[in-house]
Each structure stands twice: as C-alpha cells, then as structure tokens.
Length: 316
Image (cartoon, rainbow, N blue to C red; front, side, top):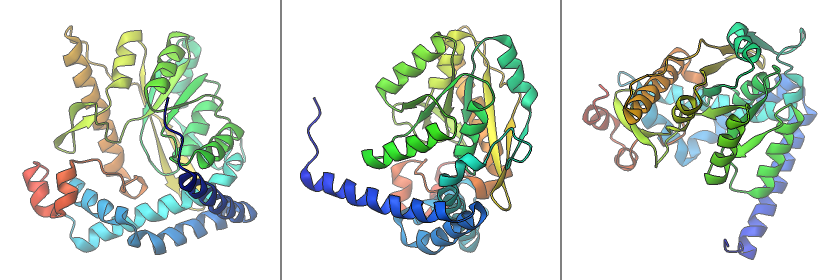
C-alpha cells in the first residue's frame, strides 16, 4: 500500500488545482483563436525563466548541431509558444471537430485508417508530442476506430482528473495511464480487438537502446512488441499546426515491421524504424515538437556544453 500524501502536499495540490481552474476558466471565456494566442504569448514570456528552457536549448543543439545560440533560442521559444497555445486551446477541444465540414482540423491519409477499420482488426498507433497532440487523439477516437489512448498522468491527481474529464468530453472514451497497470490495460485491449495508441518520443528508462538523431537512447519497445505479438499494423500519425488554431492530422502508411526470426533483433529494428519516423516529423516541423523533455543522457544536461556533448554523442 502506498503512503498517504502529507497534508502539505495535499494542500499544494489543492492550490495548484485552483490556479489551473482560474487559467482554464480564463481561456474558456475567450474565443479559441484569442485563447491560443494568449497562451502562446504567456509562455513566450514565462518559459525562458523555467529550468526546462535550458533543456530545450540543449536539445535543439543536439538535434541541429549547426544551430548557434540564437538559433537554439528561437527554437526553444517556438516550443514555448506551441505549448502555451495548446494550453489556451485545451478548454476549446470540443470546437475542433476533426471530421466536420466546419471543423478546425484537416485529416489526411484517411485511407490508411479506413483500411484498418474495414479490416475489423486492431492496430498499434504511434505518434509523438507534436503541435496540439490532444487534437490527434480526437482525430483517432472520433474516426470510428475503437481505440484506447496511453497517457502520462499529471503528478497532481486533481489536475489529472480535470484533464481526463476534458479528454472524455471531446471524444476519448478509453485512457490508460503509463505504468504497469496501464500496460496491462493496453495488452488486454489489443487482445480484445481494440486499437491502442502510444506517444513514443520520450525517454523510457527501462527501454532498449535505439538510435535517435545519431545516438542510442532508451526507447520504449512496447508498441513494437505488441504489434509483433498480435500481428497487427503499426500505424504512424502526425499533426502539424496551422495559423489561427487550425491543424492538419496525417495518418501515414503502416510502418514496415522487421520480420527477423530472432524476436529481440526484430523488435530493436522496428523500434529504430519508429524513431526514424519521429525524426522525420521533428525535422520537417521543428517548432511543433515538445523540446522541453530530457530525452538524452543526464550527463549532457548537467554539463550544458552542447557543442562538445553533441560531438561526443556522434551527433555532429
């Protein structure tokens, strides 16, 4: 049994939840385009004061070693702008309506999704933290595909409940928090014919080493393992931000899974293929990615000497 949180921690959660309610309440009162712009403006102003700003700068130079300090800063600021806009858009998710003529989302590659729906079999869907990834979840779950979405729960349980309530409201009926219990839910879902969706662009300490921008990093093998185990398609999805809180969601052709008879080798090669897809999306639309996550080794962020570290990691 886990220890009961301390009274001070519980009080802190309550205060954070009140702040969340105030901010989301303000965004909900504004038209979506103004809420998106306000959120972007706010995080462009505040983001550079957060420790994660340095993380974003280091990440930018690791992925694009040719960037100078000003270039890395512009990319970090683009990441803050996108994240702030996502926050401003979050209370307005019901307005996105991916498949409605008057919606704010253009869906491309629908034929790849329809092929899975028409087959009557599930799929393993993979994507990353691009643009407004909540819109991607809406496009997946409102398509007619029966899908369960994996997510990383918020540390504050009150805020986590509020976030999931909004997700349920815009059409994501099944959610599984990352962790052992969530992994079991995803396994059972796929076994029962329900598609599962993963964000596969973040560090997973218990993962396998797979190349990501030229350096082996711990990567979650779960999607590759499940696709191999159940012999189902591995469907990649991406999203691109357009002006005025509009988006393009693209369902790409299923990834080619390695068929090596050695299971470990096949999974490692398929994980590499997934990372290559993610790399392509990041390079194509760098301002849309979640740059503030510590994807690389801890030593790189401790040192902060990105020019040297990128050379040592084989990224230049």
